[in-house]
Image (cartoon, helix red, strand yellow):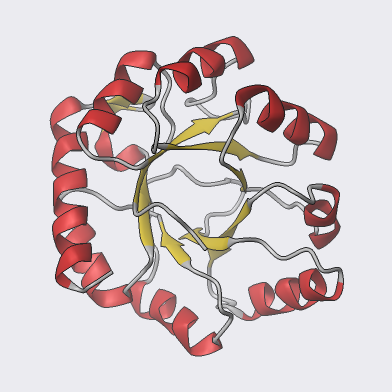
Length: 223
């Protein structure tokens, strides 16, 4: 069961973490993928994690990292969730037993069937994630592009009856997040580039506006 509703991802500084938490975010994402402009070192991540107030979930974002690296990082920083955002196979979730894993899925023209097949194997291995994060598909990238998910396609997730919460990402901004929530009815929303003044640099006003719009829309739909 996912316990957060609004996640600000790609946090790089203690000040941005404090501000997001103070504005009402109940989760922040810390990126460890070195190919991202939002990547931080273990030392930077520790500083961010130590300054977060109780009740704000710490989510570590990994792309094709080894299971040992993910586990060690999660234990050192006391991460609440690890988010796998690359090409990690179902067996990886088995190697991370005991950690709460959010599996990111890049939703493209193939629709949800690749995820259904993936989760069938996870189920066989008794290694299910705790939530699915839907991001937009773009060849050669692993998220954070600002590209929007097809909302009508995203809504079809509920028809799969997977008994997993859906976190919606992909191109969400303060201006469109309310409409996205109305269209898709996700359990939670997630943004990175949608609240930035430039790649990797969070904009205070945009962060506040996104969180306020998200919470209003989620509350309005009883989510």
